[in-house]
Structure formats: C-alpha cells, structure tokens
Image (tube, rainbow, N blue to C red; front, side):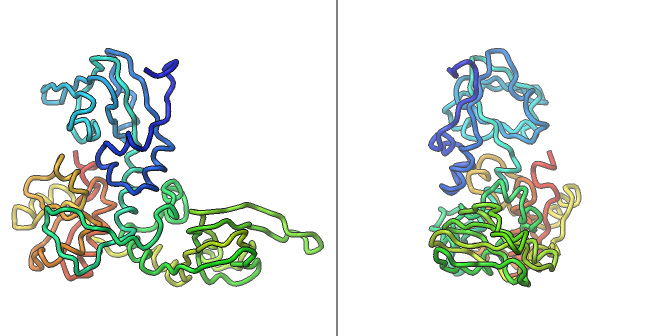
Length: 360
C-alpha cells in the first residue's frame, strides 16, 4: 500500500508489462516512467470519475476493479491478468462506470503523450524496404537511424516539432545529417545567417549572447542531449541571435534550412469521416490498421488487416495496389504518416478522421 496515500514512482519494468507501452524504446520508457506514478484508490470508489475527460488511459496495477458498460454488461478486471495488460480507455470501451472491489493501485497515462512516443519511435527507423513479412508475422530487427533520446517526447509536444506533420517525420529522419563535434567548437555564431537547424544527439554546449560589445558574452543556457537550436533564424529568416559552443566532444544532427522549412509544411493527406469510410468499405475498400500487433489483437475494426507503421514498407508487396485503403490508428497521427508512405508507392489511401479515439 502507498505510504500516506501519496503517489509513488513506477519502475520501468512495471510499465513494460503493459500494452502498447511494452513496444516503446528504452529511452521512451525511461521518459514515461519519469512522469508516471502509482495511485491508491480506496474500495468502493470509481477511478474513472477522476479521469481527465477521456484523455487518459488507466492501467490496473493491483487489486480487482468492477466495470459496467453502457450496454449493462459487467465484468471484473483483475490486476496481473492478460486483460489488465491493456489500458482501460473508458471512451473507447463504452464504459459507464467502474468500482474498486478491493483497494487498488492504478497508473494514468496521457493518451496524447503516449501516441506521440509510439509514432516517433516507430518512424525513427524502418527495417530495410526490401524486407518482406507476413501481415501477421513477428517483428523484425529495427535499423534505428538516430537515437530516440534526441527527441524528447515532452519537447515534441510543445517544441519546434509540435507542428511537424506526422507524415513528414520519416522524411525528416532521412534528411538529418549526423556530424561529429569537438569541445570548444563553435557551431553557430551570433549575427550570422541561419543555414541549419541542430539537434544534440550526444554532448553538452553553452548558448551565449553578446549584449554589450564592451562586455564578455552572457551565458544564456547549458544544453545537452535532446536539445535543439537554430530554429528561430530559420523560421523567421533572421540572423542568429546567439552563439552556441560545444563544451564536450559529441555528435549533432543537422537539418538544412530548405528542408526545415519544407518539412514544417503539411503534405496533402486525404481524410474521411467514419460514415463515409464505412460506405467505402462496403463498396470494396479495406481497413488498414497501422498500430502495433498487440493493439490490433486487443481490439480492431472488423475486417481490418494489420500492418504496423514501423514495418509498413515490408508489407508493400503483399498489399493490393488496385485497392483503396482506409488507414486508421488511435488518433490519426500514425495513420497520416502511413498514408503518406503508401502514396509514395502509388497506393490510394484515406485517413480515418480522429482515429479510433475520435469515433467511439
């Protein structure tokens, strides 16, 4: 039981028991564990009443939870069972209410944060395009191009990549150029024209600015792995407003100005609402679920086939290039990226608006 009913941190190994959290990279799992806490709920209370407007997934860590669905059916969810490995998403599962049949412990996960982590993890490295797989086969070894730790999920929610269209994430990974740097090396200089956006993959740097020509530069910040710099000059087409100097040896990822500007523009992705999608499927279109196999197995649209986003290129030869696909995921983020990839191979694909979360 939790001391004084206060939340306590959760070990990564505990989170790794749940789906689709278990599919996250080690870096992402560490990030998520840093913001997750076990929460004690007394017997006879309803933990879903405390949820944030359906924007959280609830996982049962300990105890027994009674669930009543909108259709009147009731079940008992026991911690440690296969069913408890999946999130209790009240909106998606049409849950009316729940009750703690025993004292329980739960963890709540922000659904948007988890979806961002899953999307960027899956797009950070595809298996070779020529790799072939069965549509329901086992996962292959991933060829990661960059260290996922360089892309802190919380910065992806609120930083320069917040507005990056999901369909452009893979293109950005392909265009990022790794460069080795040394301690005391100046990367950008205040007053110069902006030519690259930089991301620190390894190492530490100081950001300084000259405010008075007669005085030494002022230290603005010390930045390290996962920090980016240089976007202001590129986005505003102004000169650099600070100098960045490496304090250690390390490695940077850089993106050309032209690529930076181009990739922040949304590609043409065609979407479709649920009623029109159902009509399309009735006329011969096919549902394509690009979530992880574990998510697909737990719950999917009837008749859908599963082609996880990170393995999609390996499935191309098994897809019908004369068919029309309705691509979906939880929110539309992963399916938008998948539709863009399919379009590159000449497939006709539409994205389900709002994903499964927006069409309960």
